[in-house]
Structure formats: C-alpha cells, structure tokens
Picture 1 (tube, one colour):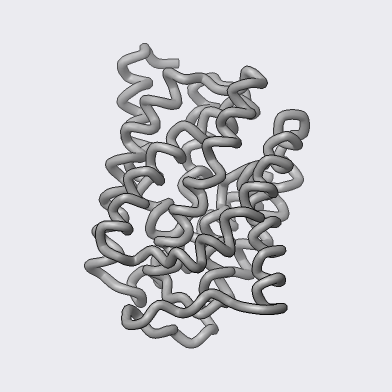
Picture 2: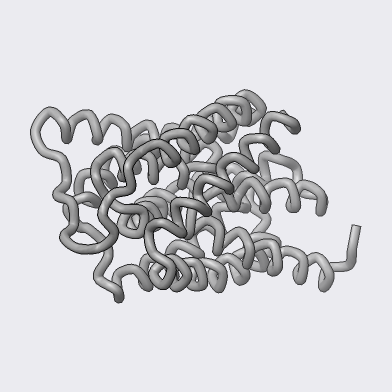
Length: 252
C-alpha cells in the first residue's frame, strides 16, 4: 500500500490511459478495476467507484464530439431509452452478484468483436451520417441496446466494444460510432452510479482521483481519433480487444 498522495498519482495516471482507451475503443475499465482492487478496494466497490470516472470522462468526450458535429441524434433517440432501462436492471443485479462469470462472457464477446472488426469491409469514414434503422429493424436494434445497457449497468468493462459492434453493424463508421458510444454511456451512467452509491459501493475520493485522469484521457482520445480517422481506430480497437480478451481468460 502507498500513501494517499502516491495513490492519487497512480489513479490519475491510470485514469489518463483508460480514458484515452475508452474513447478510442473501449476496455479502459479492465485496467482501472484491477488497479483499484490492488490499492485496497473490494471488487464490488471498485465496480461502483469506476462509474465516477466513466461519468466525468464521457461528459468531456460527448462535449467534444458535439462540438465537431459528429453525434447522430436519431441514433441516440433509438438507443438511449432501452439502454437506460437495461442499465437500471443490470445495476440492481450487480449490487448483489459478483462478476467472475461475466469475465468469461466478456472475453468471448471481445474475441468475436475483434474477428468482426477485422473481417468486415471498412465503412466509409466521414460523409453523410448513416440513418438510424426503422421499422422492424429498429425494434431489433432497440432490443440490442437494452442488452447493452444491462451489461453496462452490471459491469461496464468492455461495453464500448459491444456498442461499437452494434453501431458498426448499423452502418456507422468507427468515429461516428464512438460519438454515439460515449453519449449513450453518459446517458445511463448517472443512474447506475446513483444506485451503486445508494448501496454504499462508491469510494468518492478514489473515484474523483481516477476521474481527473479519465477526463483528460477522454478529451485526448477524441482528438486522436478525429485526426487519425477510421482505419487507425479500427486497428487500435482490434489490438485492444485481443489483448484484453487474453487477460480476461487468464485472470478469470
């Protein structure tokens, strides 16, 4: 164990890396959760505390994407209501159930998303926004976003990969998909955080130290992917997914 000042520096540095990673691809929580546990937090408290950093990070990232005009309101109108409903149920479950089984599930999902990202033809980067699905297709996507919200409320770690898989399947390039991702996570995280806090599973001091790094990392991630474009983001997503999937399989 380190003294509080050293702990705060560690958390800030880890948050900086995780925030950048979360906005570019996802999986930053798979870095922050083990570090918080190493520093002495029980796993369930680390799971709740992580939402403080996620909330702050996505406020900054959503604001940056909005300034660049990359957020599709039509996609958000489709995604947010079912995702919020799912997140409430997932969080209520997370308060009482551990996450070991979900580590295995997440590892499998990450490998599948990596394969999908590698083999799917690269969608157009930039240009017109892909319209949100309509009719029966919209119902399928709404149901999928409910499951995304459920998982995000329960564990959060790796939810960005799943959201990107859904938006890519809907025809969005990875830059615009990331814009939808960070805004969607921002929509359901306050409720999840409130439920964790109500259950006494949030360490606010740790969370705020981590959040400071996440905020700066999130802003950095937005700038990097706008500058580098879709192909660079795709490569980062693929490598990140594979590395974290291996980590989950080893530690699970």
